[in-house]
Length: 321
Ligand code: NAD
Ligand code: UDP
Ligand code: UDP
Image (cartoon, rainbow, N blue to C red; front, side, top):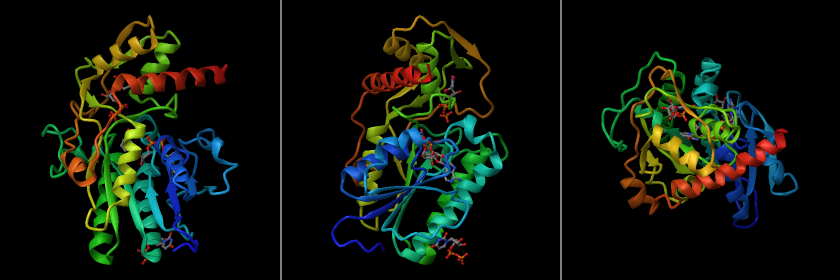
């Protein structure tokens, strides 16, 4: 445990310079806590945490979670891992190492400190689901040897490790299965659908729908997601998860393109490109468990969230000029 002399906690956030991690850190600092932001800056950027450097309760540490880490903290949020298919398939071996060796190191750290640890897992553990919407009891339909497997199976193995440390060592764990999340500070070039479509729309390029656009996703605004993570961490030890965190309003990718054309006022043409291999055809969270266990559900509508995200990307474009 960290030696602090009040109710403040010292909290480690791995992947803290990334999209979700940086928003989580903002909330933790606003709550009066001390935060160690650990990141190897593979997909995260210093720009996401630039506004925090003058805060005496904030500390940045450049480190790779695949290597052991010795710090003294009260809680750990393990978010380190590239999340966009383009990024996690760039060096798939490193992606699996990040999920698996990273989980082992962070669990070993939590075990030594006897502290709570939360894992940012993913809806990808359900693969290309044959059950719809996906509830936590569904075991998934995952290809173990495809291009997405480094991420999907890495995250599945991390969940296994979390539950084995829980059963074998009595560790207090929390596992959140995060569904597609979007918002300001997504990397503008990370290839994910929301950032791609908005950047294409704002720069007058064609909007690239992969396949026929009838595949579905459910998009959660980042503030809602972070609220869910905080609520999960705050629960006592019998709430381990896995718990789905996502927005249950499901839309097709073709419909998303129309929302983004509207939000940007773009005149871009919509074109179709090849659907990537193993691209899940549908995805929608069943959030009944999050509602009862965490009293949580998303509050931000897609159009309200897209508006804020478009403003962010307009500013990014200005800074790139
Ligand atoms: P992101 O790429 O913006 O953030 C990931 C962060 O982890 C980056 O800052 C990156 O530099 C860092 N990182 C990667 N490998 C690392 C390593 N070996 N050591 C230390 N740092 C490392 O992505 P995000 O969207 O913020 O995702 C955060 C977490 O949430 C990830 O674990 C991701 O799998 C999970 N998640 C995100 C979504 C989503 O839609 N955004 C959905 C499901 C799960
Ligand atoms: N570890 C770490 N920080 C710590 C304690 C452990 O990074 O404070 C790493 C260490 O590399 C170890 C791994 O976590 O290999 C798993 O630790 P555990 O105690 O579970 O197993 P060990 O391998 O030490 O028997
Ligand atoms: N997609 C698309 N055009 C793009 C980027 C993505 O049509 O420019 C599709 C992709 O094929 C998938 C969905 O949008 O069906 C979501 O993709 P993303 O990479 O954001 O996340 P995923 O949920 O697949 O991990």
